[in-house]
Length: 226
Ligand code: SAM
Image 1: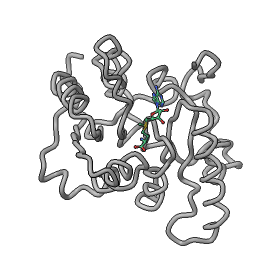
Image 2: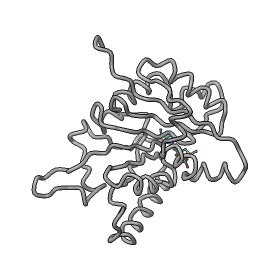
Image 3: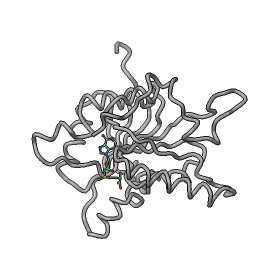
């Protein structure tokens, strides 16, 4: 249950300094960077940790609803920050995890057009018909994701459940602000490789020799009359 979760009133009122202390400019009294990559339902944080090295200049945030899982990721990041404090490529100061329900109040956390990439890796399938509205990709939620994404930004999805893949593709195809990226694009994109290999759920699917389905979508420019 998430009835005790706290949400900022607006992105301005969010205090990111405790998440990314090394990116807080104490002289200016503000952050010197904003979150630009979000891993929605990040689970145990495998993707996040790989993103830290791939995008050392960008702030990445994992959002996770389960308390213990969030705590686990937090501890993992603290340990990495200590271990790699002097590392030249990444000292893991650019990744953090936030406990929250990504299906609620995302625009309270992120400004319009703030995000470059949003990942939805192995989201919960909610198999039963009456549970479909609980899925993390719906028309209403896609409009929120489009709002927080920059034009040209990318939504990444991967799942081992074919029915859920078809559902996500159908909803994204139907949405006027998203356009699917083709297989050639997928082949050359580093993040596709990372989400295929680096999440804990993805590794489990590989061990069990299961299938994985991917769909990536570009955030289109908002039409003038919107
Ligand atoms: N992405 C991870 C991976 O690939 O290993 C975790 C996949 S796991 C099957 C789905 C995760 O999404 C769970 O950790 C669950 O707690 C989280 N989750 C489900 N609904 C959520 C929501 N509304 N907001 C944030 N996290 C959510």
